[in-house]
Image (cartoon, rainbow, N blue to C red; front, side, top):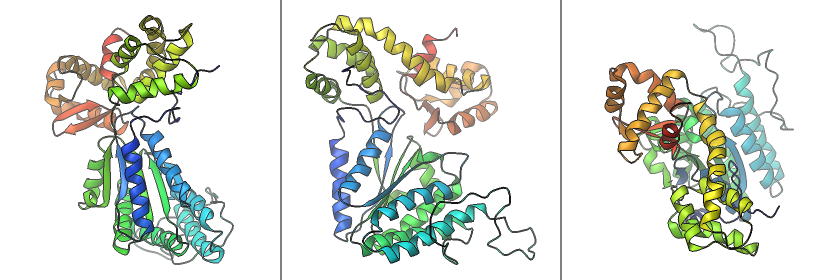
Length: 407
């Protein structure tokens, strides 16, 4: 019952170790914007299980403590940006509305117009009597839950780039008039559609030129910078990129020891060494093994023998919830591709492998494997570390596939 460890998806661990530099850097960004100084939006990138979502939540909390309006959304490959962004901004504006209710109501009208444009009919080919703004579809009567009339002629053109520029400019203007700012947190940012990415970059560019206090704080897989760069060539100057990785040994030890010590327990040095070998410092693995070891240990300090007893249980839970759930999403052709990657990874320290070597291992031409590779990238299971090379987005995934080769 007193087990302090939290191996949940996006669940904040009891000790957020190893992220002090990122939190301090974000405080500087918030302070600079509060002083009217120019600053870039922030993008967190890293593999699965390194704590991007947890850190995103911590950055949002930092903005809340300064009185900023905040909203959060999770991008999905099958969902346009309009509705989730409108919901996030609705929340952010409401948090600031007490300081200037009349202006806040006007801005909420723009947010509502932006959201409702998602339900408009497309313009008929070749023109026609229907207006460019269209009309709501009969089969889609969704409403954004904003209790003000929708604005007309603002953020409702149907062009996502124009609409995002107008929307975020108006929202940021409200924040500036209240002496605060707004932070929009976007998780899984690499899953945004190309048009949405382009519009978001254009809006961030406009905001930076006007010096308005609105930050986009994104989190995504390692190839997210490439996604942004492919949309707008100037994107590398719009965002401050923070690469989030595994914890250093001292940080991983702190993530384990501090929660234990608060419960009047501790680990032996040998136990900490065994846990670091098992987890490689990846935060999700640290929490998973920590929870399993705590449950089997009968006394403090927790020993290396306790780790040996708990390891199979931790590995079994990871095999089902962390690795297996992702493997099940792949088609037979995609699984074959990943197994070839895993075999090659055993020879290369589980780093990136050449796509040409994967093709050679499978006895296929590289071009014939492009559909499987592209599908795996869209599912967020692999990413292109560099041209002609491919790597897993999930730490230890290659090892998992080799251990379950006969499944």
